[in-house]
Structures are given as structure tokens and as C-alpha cells.
Length: 140
Image (cartoon, rainbow, N blue to C red; front, top):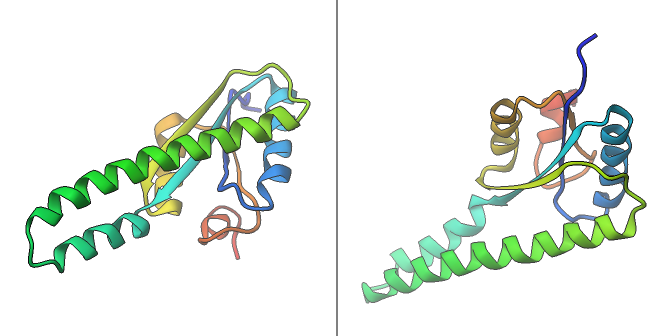
């Protein structure tokens, strides 16, 4: 049996994230594995900013939109990291090697790509969320 060295958990800070993270911590602790938390900033949200800018007659709005997009990404990463830190504080988690990975794009595609990039041995996803990522991994 292959040893489990990397466990990845997809979290979106929804109501099921607490339970999903708890299970991921349990599994990573059991195998003394590195835990990777992945979160994807949905490109749909960024497309709205770009679409608004593209419909403006004043071309200077494009520079503003680029700045707004960058600030949105930075703010989301900061807020989501704080959310993950808060979840982790609330849990009696074992001392594990832990990394938080942020991606930007279509959530299920970015999660699948990250599993491959990181050579993840065990992927944990909740049963609820905004996309069909759990169906991709376990079937609908």
C-alpha cells in the first residue's frame, strides 16, 4: 500500500468547511502527512470587474479596473487566510506541516490541477459547494 505523504483539502469557508477541515486534520495526523489547504478565487468574480471596464467609453477606467482586480484578489486572499487561521485555532489540531494554496480560475479545474502539481496522495472535499468538484472526484 502506498504511503500517504500529502493530504489536500478544498475549503471555501462555507458552513461545511469546519467539518471538512476537521476530517482533513484527522487524516493528515493519522498518516503524519503534510496538509495542503486549497482555495480558489473564482474567475467569474474577476470577469465581472473586467466586463464593467470593457463597457466604458473612458479608457482610463481600464487602469482602474486592473487596480481594482488586484486589490480584490489581495483582499480575498487576506480575508480567506484569516478565515482558515480562525478555523484552525478552533480545532485541536495536531502539529502538522501545513500550507495554504490560493489559485485563481474555475474552482474544480484549479483543484484538479493542484492535485496533479502537488502530487497529492489523498484529496478531501466537502459534499457541498458552488461547483461540481466533489462529483468529479467521487461521482454524482
